[in-house]
Image (tube, rainbow, N blue to C red; front, side, top):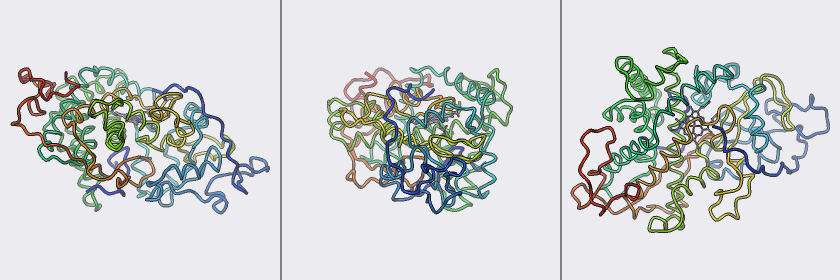
Length: 485
Ligand code: HEM
């Protein structure tokens, strides 16, 4: 059972650009808290404003736990009192500085001369068994590298994803969505997080990296064990299962290439070593898995808890794209990340940051500096959010991620057109971690659908198996998803 205390994973086993900046929000005007060394009149050298230096003056604000999860906006408002950067605790005894100001976030994300992604030096300062390491522990991949090494890895990823055609991707999402809906369609009830949002990315990655559907349950079980395992033994077993899955994937593509991401990574002219190949596959799966699940889950939760979307399901005005856009503005799937380390002491937007200190960006806090309240769909226009990050490390796969999320939501709501929340929206619980904005569960109910019912169903659908040569005959439009018409 998923709990709010799940650990957070980006690199998985322990082992674009932002929307082009539009109108910038006003500069920070908040008065500094009394005695704040970052704003005092003393020369900057004496105003070392980071938590380890002045714990009494700057108690870090806790960026995890039930209070933070219940009302992150309140924590961000509190953090803004410090100025553009504020001291936070991201896990027990692990502190960082968090950028909450939009303009400062852009300055940091675009300056790869001052700011490095290499976490190796910083890792020496935290315990080797810290629960934060899966999110921040260095590995030889795109995420932790700078300059030419970063470009070399990133080109492999970007060029390979470019080979996935949008119409082909859409058909693959239909197939993944239909496979899952077949599993719970006859029940009339579902946890849209555990049974749908968390599984879509895994089915998609299994397919895009080139393994047959029969392998997807292995991937699901290994990752579920890593995320939900309660004992170190369970976690170790799941880690082993995941490593075995990746080794088998790479082994099978070495034996025979296919039209898939693994083969394209292998054959890319940038020539990754085996170690680099494996770490970058693991990183891409890890980077995509949780944020994509949360984009789907958070958007579905908006659609099912807001009458404007409910009406849409039965012919109203707002679309899944509107819900996704609202989520990207207000509940970014990755909420606080972009871990950076300055290569020298730097005076940044009013605060001294020491060389090697961990600094992260709060996409959620930066986004909220835009006043979107007057818009019909908050966040549907005016300015640009930072939820894909910005600069050289911005999400390289945002178009694919958007297409997958939109199609997965359209497919679900088309097959299960009367789907509704099974609990009041106010009872939905958020997970407690610092990095992700993620629901614990999203229970919903709908009129059951069965394989033997008349008309089209996910069981008899002509495009549900894009790689299959035996597609079913033309289907009636009686119960055909709008997206397939
Ligand atoms: C198919 C799904 C996805 C894949 C394969 C993917 C892949 C990646 C990769 C490889 C990176 C590292 C880029 C680099 O360091 O140069 C990255 C960064 C990032 N992605 Fe995605 N991503 C996906 C979906 C998403 C979603 C849904 C979101 C949230 C809206 C998101 C937000 C981000 C952000 C904020 C970063 C920057 C993180 C940082 O620098 O700390 N991604 N993504």
